[in-house]
Image (cartoon, rainbow over all chains, first blue to last red):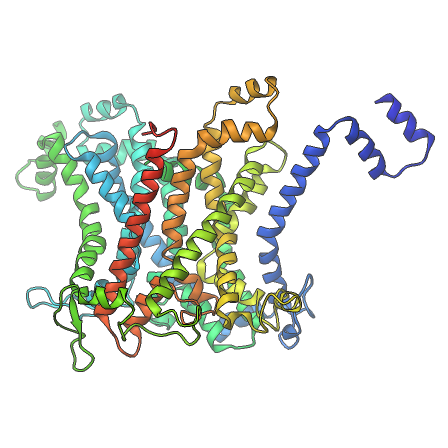
Length: 310
Length: 330
């Protein structure tokens, strides 16, 4: 090291040359540098498209067709106001929130009951039923879609009775999405519930708590991180879902159309208002982006534990 | 039990119900708790799947109020698989020249699944590697890598629509200049297929990375120390320690991603490409159902075939997992 310092003192050198000299002496430094090059590469590929979307949104609407690079063309943030005036984007967002919240609550309650049974009780056919849940989660939505569409648009009658029209209503989206995303929640909750020591539940039962009371007053609170993980993943999944959200709803915000339809209507109705398309996308991304920043650890642990369990 | 008695069981229906639940055997109680979940799964998954199969055995009626007519057995499967079903929607642009439509959709779906899962696995390894190391700011690197996974499909579609849009996007012109892309890549089948694949890789590599990361973290660290002392190069350590030990986790991750990739629909619609330009199997189901013909039986046939193809993929992966050197796993 001292020789190198002496060298640097002898001849005036730039920081790069001296770094190369030290790297030759210590190859670990090169690996480190390569590692950070890779980190920067991945940060660039994941974040740059989102940054660029923001630059389009901030561009002047008359000049945006010239093409947008690193910086906005002109500067006009008014598109963030205009997106709410052209179409009721806030209503679309609200509908999506309602769908995601209702589905999350419904999935958490039903998957808690199932997770408790799978995680803490012994019964015949446990493996078979768990496997059935897993297999159901593998099937493509397209193979469920035709009968569900017929059912929700009153094309099927049971015993002469037609069920109410669920097409483009909250239950018409929430029920299918609950079924699609329930398997992951069941796997996550089964894992967490099975880890609670039996003694805690027994103690509550001796105190006189009912069976259901023991589940919701003892097991669920003690597994709060697991419940939060399952809830966050379900919420994000429903908010992001395309297939059922798009095909089981109309296109008007008044008819419970979610954000999917809101964004798509910008693509189809406002042909060259790229700044509005980008601004609407940015606004719709913000809720999930916040969730990712706040709950990064939970998402990582939930996806890995839920998916690798079986 | 004391509270139970004070509430006078027998009069209040809620406490009667709770009392009844207290007296169930563990097994009956378990089945009771599973009832809501399985009721939902039956209504939304099992029953529709069964009914899809039944519709696929009926005849399509093109005139009159009813969409389907009499029982025709497996005839729909024969016409679809031999590409003779005239009711499957035809694309505006044919991807592979004369290839008829079902095979074309099958080709697109399988090619998409294979190519995207392959690249996602490679990129996933890279991302998992940088998420595993300890350094300052790792939390934010993880957030950045997960972010695309959390972006709604419709916005992912919008993003790639804009990126490859000839006027606003900056990717079209250079790719066209070097002769890779057409003037408007979003209307060309081959170019659009590449765009859709890149969009999927951008969004879902993170999921693969997380599962690989979980596999990496379960590997005993002392194995690496031993290997390093023994003089193994980083590549040898990866090849002989990491890869065999995370193989089961990797297989599960690839299985999940393959199944998911074979459902592809949203990004095709949302990126403005459209099912006519890049037809996938799910596209074919939706288009046949909502197209001019409203051919429910033909759509149901394709839907059920999609389910069968995915089931075959699952079996394939399970066999690979069982035959692997660490087949004792599970």
